[in-house]
Image (cartoon, rainbow, N blue to C red):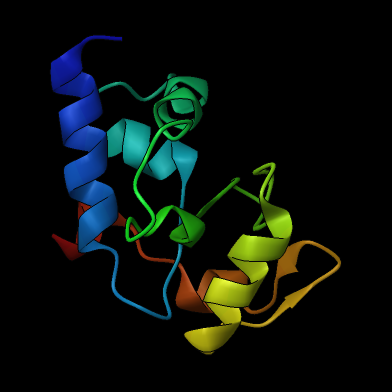
Length: 101
């Protein structure tokens, strides 16, 4: 994907409130590419330490990132409970950029 796609993905992720999560697919839809959730994941291969990538998971609430332990720790600090790589109460804390922006 191009640099505009990457910029839009980063902007959306920065808007996710602490203690909330969203999915790769929800971000893809919000930037106008509804079938490109994998591309969103690819964009997240390179980000800074203060970037909230830990707030993004797959559509069933599972953390699929290779830095699972780090993400679970960061989510825990925000009050998000993760058990067996799955975010608990996923639907309750889901932040959908299409309805919340």
